[in-house]
Image 1 (cartoon, rainbow, N blue to C red):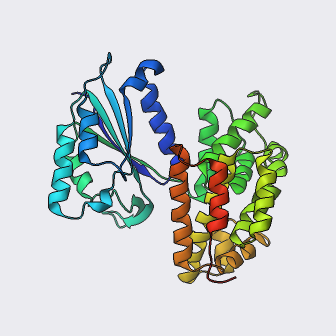
Image 2: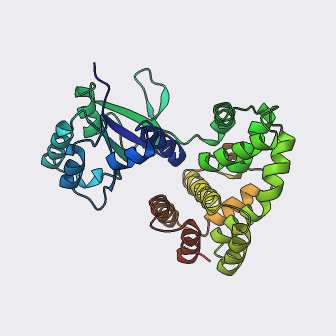
Image 3: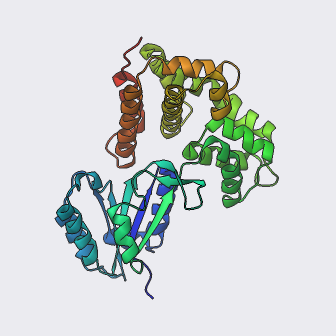
Length: 343
């Protein structure tokens, strides 16, 4: 049976999605030749014909082409005829083209047939028309979901990622780094690489290493910047940002900001569903005054404002990864654009 040539990649873990896309690109072989057979499209600006033309092109001195469509605009397909037209397009894709649909998705919980709760997806779940089509065409399509780990899963994720990178973490070190990075896998990957280099891959990273290399060098200014942004302190935020960019990569600072606002959004939702300070501390791993600060920041925003802020960060993330907006400019734009109903 031939290998599937249509990929549905979806999830809320940008780093995991990027890693999978990089693997597909690497499988193209010689980079010089691969570029001739690689097409990237933005589903927000391209149409079905653009996808069709790219996918039906004949590979150049290769056995296959790779067409990557980010944000394929599935939300616009509201009628049965529109959905049928899109699946008809998928049926046209020849085996000589690997078509990859990259779909932003969010984790959701649902009860399985045994009555137990399990992780699922808000968009590409079993009831989605694409998943129904995939079930009927299992020989040509594969679906891969990339969950962003929650805070409780991060120590195990860090341990596994360290092994992938050729090193080891003690349990205490993994827990300490998880507290520092939160559920942001992109920042965690960078910190893991830094720490493994620090110990020269000769021994397991300890919690003392994490404090010395990651937390003590970065925590104060990164956390201060995130708090200044959330507090609406634009002048202070710009000052801290310029300090950070002298030593840290803009992408790392941006990833930390995304993680911070994702946590604020989740805390806001928890508070609106009856959560209190004790449950916030327990559920989000916040200790001391950190929980109080987070709740205070949440109270500056309505739930809709936090959702809008997180959506704006997602848009800027897309622009950064597609070379539209530099990461340092994206940070300044978000800082200056952010609005809250309570000051």
